[in-house]
Image 1 (cartoon, rainbow, N blue to C red):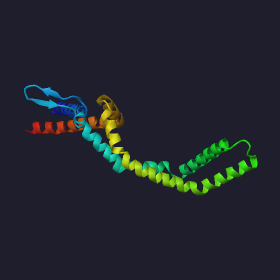
Image 2: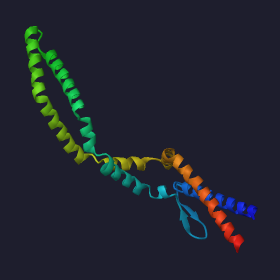
Image 3: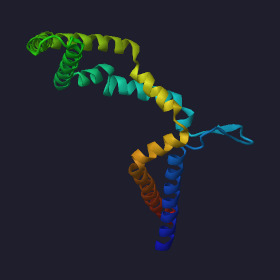
Image 4: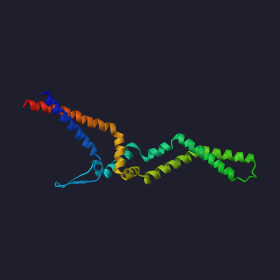
Length: 199
């Protein structure tokens, strides 16, 4: 009786493991539709079959729930970055102006001009950069569609590459699903064996 139970449980475990393994494989494979003769039924992996729909959904989710163009630009234009931009602008403008001044202008006047430019940038620079950022955000939100960029990028992936990336990310979790299928199949096999032996 114990041997029969063990055999039935082992068969159940193998069936559960193989079933889950096939289900995971069929997320991606076959990449192209395969026609099954006699029944006139086509089989194709779930992700290849709905690739365009999935790509669109991922793009929209990323843009609406995770990251928007406004957030990217706001992050780039944070206070620390703004200070760096102001410093860089100041250095560039002063360097260009000093290079363009005729050599006959005395160094005293050059220093005065440099200080005057520096003070103007200190006073007006923050306002100019803020206006520039607001204008950039307005144009970017109108002209750049992050969701469309992500959708196009995913659609350009070959299915082999997409499968490799997806499996790399969730490899451990998929292995657990396979093992769980075997364990559940084993347990179900024991219950089936008990029912059969009792009947």
